[in-house]
Length: 534
Image 1 (spheres, helix red, strand yellow):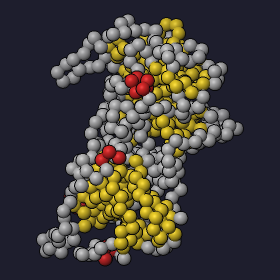
Image 2 (cartoon, helix red, strand yellow; image 1 turned 30 degrees about the vertical axis):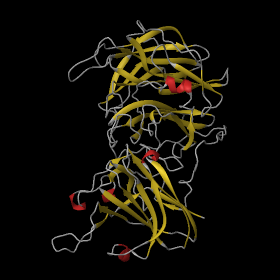
Image 3 (tube, helix red, strand yellow; image 1 turned 30 degrees about the horizontal axis):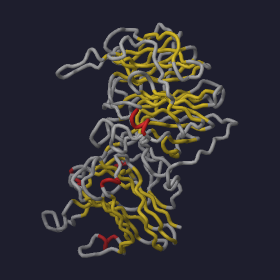
Image 4 (cartoon, helix red, strand yellow; image 1 turned 120 degrees about the vertical axis):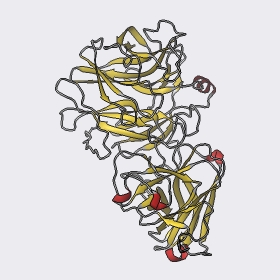
């Protein structure tokens, strides 16, 4: 899923809530390649078109940099609104002695660290029992926290070291900035499933309290999805396991959408899908996201998740009298990809990560749709610690026959080097300044060449059904298989251009008869890109 400026939404452990007439998606950034890069938010009125609002707070400021430097610190962000104080309250995991609290008058920015930590009601020994993953929610005006208590006394094993933690739930104070009263355990079975729960969220439906959770995962490639439910917040709780691996990911939350007709609300489960992220490291910025409607039985139990890639659902959003507050974005080029005159499309299609650079160079062609000044070409790239520059060249060429002929030279309109320090591990849109006049019908294109030795990723999509769910194979000369970013597959005509690949240093004829050119046409595929013509 991409934002209106063309960037892949870099959100891990994220949550979607509804504030000020719009949906707010917020989560951890990992694009900088470090343990903590900040918490970004995106706004949408339709759950499809997302605009970045930038970071909730400055992660380099001394107090927050110190707070967030630990492994897992400042994780699992959750925001609640307190109408009495008119404050948005951001809770973050911060280890001992308790959760960090930030407040702001805006849901999207300006969060300030409060001096007091939020403590939990059950923590026998703060040195060996630490409050970890959590969720806060407001149900019928009362605030609650569900948290995992990590047991650091029972650690270590040769191959399988179970990381023990158990779930508790407790009320919040009236200002929603601390806990109050006793904590109640959510351990209905008492087996290792109950004693490895994390990543909770809380919601309420038809007389039942629910806690969604995973087992200990740590950004792994799939873990079970647990649903606890109880008629009373103090229990007793009933446990279900509704997915064996959360479709290759880990649960992050549940979004409630009220009915557009006054009937039953819809509850949408959200998960980070790590199994298909191609770059190394558990804290990666290229993983996909899955959103799936939860289906309930008459007794309040929940049906199993459906991990089929062909599953589609339609949700009708309610109309409200609330006008969405326009929040100024702290990021540049907001909406540029969404409003581009030409390109592959910014959403409503599936894109796949392909990390074939530098083994291959890629060439995407397209036709100018109108006469004017081609000011910018954008293309999405990601790299995990690149060792050399990636050069992007925008060019004009005579025709396809000429382009693929030996000794032919195109007209270079612009050349732009992306140096290693400017790369992100997230699939961000790299904007190439061009500033050249073009005419409607001109044959144009851009080349991507990497001189490093580490993988560089691009986003691809299928323009024909045969290449919609997988990329390449032996017939394509060993072109590296792509990784899916989204679950569903929707084909589109794209820009009508052609994508070519050329193996590194392949500059001679090939084939048994010496008559095959060293450039492959990757039919039915297109890179994610856009162009601005003014």
